[in-house]
Image (cartoon, rainbow, N blue to C red; front, side, top):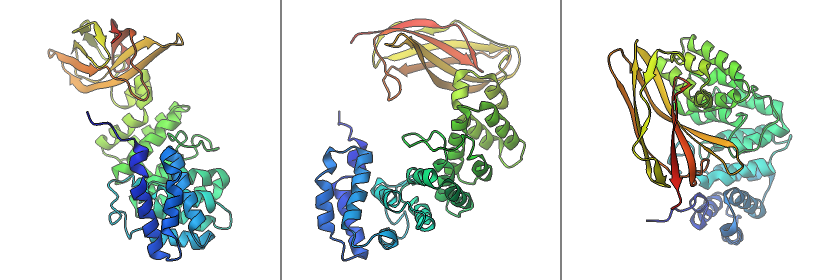
Amino acid sequence: MTAKVPLKEIALNAERIARIGHEVQAVCPAFNADAFVTSVMADLPRLELSARIARTSQGLHAHLPVTGPDALDILLRSLPPTPAAAGVPNDFGLHLYSPHSDYVSRYLRTAEHLDQSLAALARMTGYFSAELPVRHFLTDFPDETMKAIDAWTRSEDFRVRRLASEATRPLLPWAPRIALPADAGLPILESLYDDAHLYVRTSVANHLGDIAATQPDLVLATLQRWKTSGRLTSQQFAYLARNALSNRLKEGWPPAYTILGYAHDAPITLTPLTLERTELRKGDPLSFSATLSSTTTAPVHVMFVIATTGQNGQPREKVFFLRRATAKPGQELRLAKAHPLRSTARWKVSPGSYSLALQINGRRFPSVAFSILDS
C-alpha cells in the first residue's frame, strides 16, 4: 500500500517555494529568489502546515526590497493573470498562494493600509481562499472590515462572494474565533442564500449551521423565511436546510425534520434490527438490516447511530446518514448497509462494547449490541 503523503508536504514544499521565488523575482528583479528559497527551506521540513505558511510569508518580508504598499504591489503583480493560469485546480485554491494572503494579514494589517489590504485579500482569494487572514482584520477592524465584506457580497467573482460568508462564520474550522455575535453575519447571508453558485450556497449553509449551534430557533425562522421567499427551488432549499441543520438532524430535533417535510410522528413501523455478526474487529464491515413499513405515504429520513462508552466513562456516539426515501402503504422499505468500522479524525474505533440503532425522522428505534474485539 502506498503511504499517504501529508498535506503539508504537498501544500508547501521545495518546488513550490522555488516557484514563489521565481514568480516574485519575475516582477521584481531586486528580489533575491535564491536567498529566499535557501532561508525558507532551512526551516520548512520540520514545520507543520500553518507554520510553513507563516515561515514563507516571513521569508518574503525579509527578502523583498520594499515594504508596505510597494511590497503588496509586487505580490499582486507576481500572481498569474487568473487562477486558471496559475493552475488552481478547484474553487478553494492552491496552497502555493497561501503565504501571499498571510503576508497581508501579518504585515499590512494597519489602519493606514486597510482599504488596500482588504482589496488585496479579495483579489488573492481566487488563488487561495483568504478567510483566515480576513478574520484577523475582523478582530482588529471589525466595522471597517464588515463594510468591505458587505461589498464583497455583490462581487462578480463567486469566490469573493463566498469569502464574505466564510470569513464571518462563527465556528470556522481550524481558524481563530472572532469577537462578533454569532448572528453578526446574517445580513451577509441574506444577500447570498440564493446565489447562483453552489460554492457560495454551501458556505451559507455551513455558516447557518454554526449559528444553529447556539441559536437553532433563529436559524429555523431564517430558513422558513427563505423557504417562502420564492428565490430558491425546492431542491436548493432542501440542500441548504439539510446542511444548515445537519447537527440538529443528527440530534433528532423534531423542528429540523418538520421544515424539511419529515413528520416526526409519521405512522411507521420497523422490524427488529439484525446484524450479520455481533463480534467484529476494527476494519470489518458492520452489516445490518431492517424493514420499514408505513400506513400512509410518508417521506423518511434515515440515520444510524453507533454508540459506546468512552475511556472517560462518558457515553459517546456517532450518527451517520443512511438514506432518504418515501414509504408507501403496502410496500416494504429495506434499510441495510455494510459500514466499515474505521477510525476517523473525529471518531476512534477501539475494542469494547457498542450498540447500533436506527433513527427515522428523528425518532430512535430499539438498539442492538455488538462488540469490537482486540486485533
